[in-house]
Image (cartoon, rainbow, N blue to C red; front, side, top):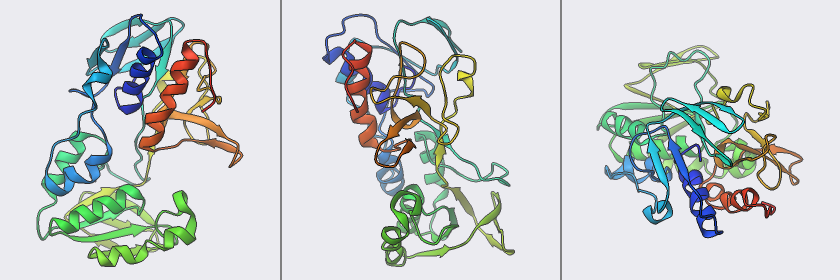
Length: 297
């Protein structure tokens, strides 16, 4: 398993639950034990708590190696920063990384890892002016946490309403009053031309200065290390192409979680489902596929 988030851990647990008795190795790029990501934008930012660790019983009998980055996939072998690792079956559960806007100098905060949450929480001091770029789920939750911590908060959204990509403009529009109720200023139709650590330049002219800038404009898998592996990456969604049984285009390799681009009969296109529930449930099918009893997810 490459990726020690929920999807990777659940894949290991499902392989054991479905009868696999061989060697299981879980490689994670971050240091420390696996944890859940959803609390990072909620309790960790709001109350200063620590990340929720994933159930350690799911890792029984698993060789967990953290601080390891995989750099290439070859038939039967992974290349990594810790050396080569042989594989007979491979689960790609590498998640995704925060997108940066064109014109960003990299000085703004993002929220994806526990370390990101700790850095951002330290910056959310009473009286600080916080500008959040993006009114998606993460943007809304960061804005709420910042307001609760005594910050003055402005959210800039390029679309006509929050959550247009996830919910469409009608349902997304229903969330507009929530911002005022939370003490947050929401500006829609506010396309951004540049971002730095001290503010945001607007595409239509003008600038919004800030003490803290947060880029919350979605995530995208970083999969350039799969080049030449035979594992196809969908150019539209940026995810690993998988079928209904989680199989990739390279035999013996499945993909789950944020990095998997599965076919959606409902939408008629490939989708990446960036949701905790997907990371929890898709590994059941992926494990069955690796064990020779493929199902449909």
